[in-house]
Length: 163
Ligand code: GDP
Ligand code: MG
Image (tube, rainbow, N blue to C red; front, side, top):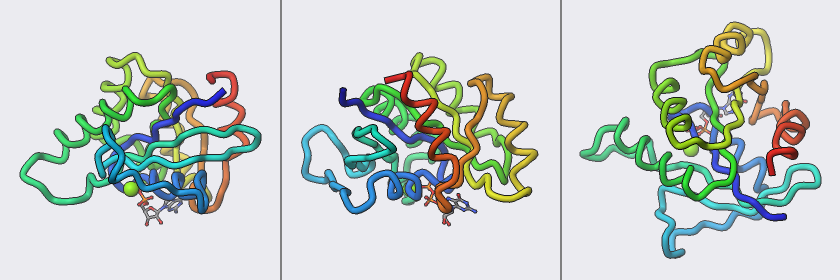
């Protein structure tokens, strides 16, 4: 069965790093696809035996007239609508920030199926952030290191029964 996973979260938590890891060289840029803006990147992902479409919410870092908050909200809502499951990423090293709570609220309001990923979890600097992540009320966070490839088996184990 094919499904779509959207990676959402505030800038700099490691969404694109994970996207690139899941997609490898199979990246399909979708600038010219109707219905998908350049702010949403789509790729063919592989994780264990699962094959699926992954969406990265990108382009948030570019300066525009619109507030970052407003852009994040709009893009996230669009990604959630396209997705069957959302991976909501936070940065375990910086802990839960107000912007993270905004995302949690959007995801709850949209009744999205959510997996909570606490990224940058390699090493001890992430321990407090991992515990704090429970506060978001989205269940147990998966400790991930998108950069080092840690937590991928755990991600697979949580994703599999949801799809
Ligand atoms: P995005 O803005 O959410 O797409 O985040 P990026 O994927 O662009 O990553 C932001 C920064 O975090 C980059 O400097 C990455 O190298 C770094 N980063 C991503 N994943 C990890 C990780 O697992 N551990 C650490 N320590 N840094 C990471
Ligand atoms: Mg990015």
